[in-house]
Amino acid sequence: MPTIASEREDALALLEAAAADLPRGIAGIPAQWFEMNSAIGWEKMMLVFGYADNRTACNNMMELAYAETTERDFRCTPAN
Image (tube, rainbow, N blue to C red):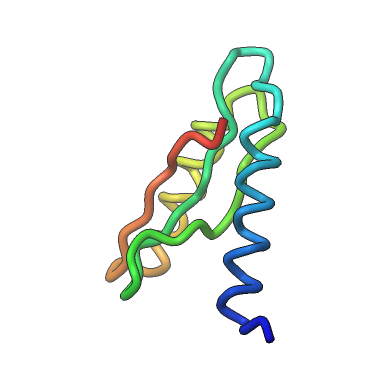
């Protein structure tokens, strides 16, 4: 019987595969994973795509998140 953790991992694997196949924006900048460092390591929190510059959009969200929660680390990483 699947566990909640295994179902989450399966869903994340499907999302990662779908993200890898997304076309890049007009500027050639890849989609970005907005990630948070937690007790279990870096976790993908959100997929940022659809902007002309996905990297800047993700970095803007990272700044907002850090301002709200300074005890956490955030980062943006390429998704495709």
